[in-house]
Amino acid sequence: MSKVMSFWKTWRKITRTALLGMLCLILVPAVCAGQKVTVRAKHKIPPPPPVDPSKLVWPLPPQIARIRYIQEAIGQRDVEGIKKKKAGWLERVAGVTVQNEELPRLKKPYGVAVDSKGLIYVADEAQQKVLVFDLEKKHLAFRGDKAPAHFQLAIGVAIDDKDRLFVSDSVLHQVTCFDAKGDFLSVFGSEKLLRPVGMAVDNDLRRLYVADIQGARLAIFDLDTYQFVRYINSQAPSKEEPHGFLGTPTNVAVDPDGLVYVVDTIPNRVEVFDTDGNYVRGFGEQGRRAGNFARPKGIAIDSDGHIYVADNEFNTFQVFTPEGQPLLAVGHFGPQPGEFMLLTGLVFDNQNRLVATDAGPIPRIEVFRYVTDAEAKLAEEKMAKGEGEKSASKSEAMKAPQ
Image 1 (cartoon, rainbow, N blue to C red):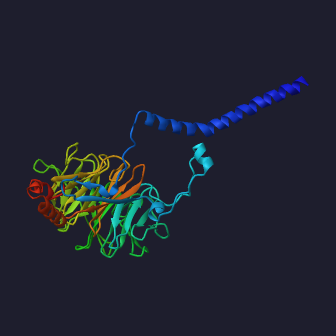
Image 2 (image 1 turned 120 degrees about the vertical axis):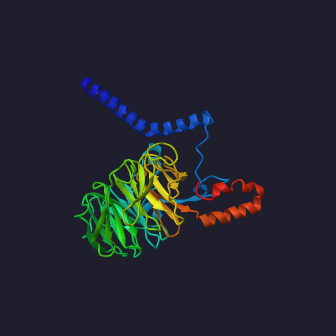
Image 3 (image 1 turned 60 degrees about the horizontal axis):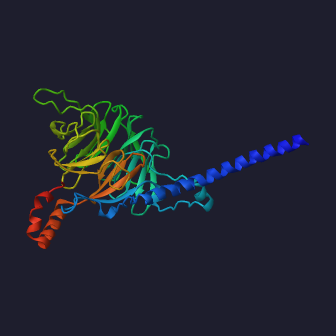
């Protein structure tokens, strides 16, 4: 009998201990959360101010804004407005995170392009496909997710004046082309490319420029026949011209005059070539001052000819004159609107929207609006009428992005 009583006493102790453990698991998160609130209230620490995206502009007032923040997009949930599943009372008390259904979203975006309809195409390295964002109709689609098209490492994207999509694959060392409807058209370049990355289109000359980082060169293809034309090769430095040679070209852009701007990431430079491949000029160097780079990647050109260069170590994009004079820096490290955590790609559309890809812990695209020189001049004239002589002293800072 004593053995039976001893057994039940031991059983009650074990049961009591297990119940206490379960209560701790449920109540400790709630108590800790309450403690955080109490500490904040005790020391009168105000909550962080909310960011109002509608007021994010660069440069700051009283100067005329030249870049305005518009929005960000991550994936199907936020684009199509799908609501997250709410936690029940038991989950809230226990501090348990509700696992929502996994929906398509960006994971590691790099290259970005925009077609004539405003559709945004983002190459995602981690998903081996291209995500297509329609922010106006709130829809997300894909390219490269159906045979015969496939990718192993989609990096660069470019769009021509027929809305054909070109996608570079760094592993398959080739370029895949889709028509405006998303149907597969062709694959080319495998015999001429070692590790293709960023690309750009010259519609007037019917050229596709492909940065080949492993080959340290640009490859030129005919935009219509997909035939290889020639390389813009590395140029040996000399005492007279120490620059003009390509080491690790990653991204490329073409201005309205046909000049080709190439981001050379390791030497932290932007090199400029003419249509014949001759070196014209360059700018940038490693450093922490305005106009310096740490790890430049994406490049884009606005409708007034300003050059935009993304830096994924500074997590900012800088604006330059065509000659390389720094004018404005936008962004810094962080998860908030107008901030970046691993800035990679840049592109302009025909509505003066600038789209940037962020491959950081919160993979996303961020959309900005460029205020043109003409729009800025009009805004300056309106300000001058309202403020008279006060605005005259600011006019010099409003002639171009600052």
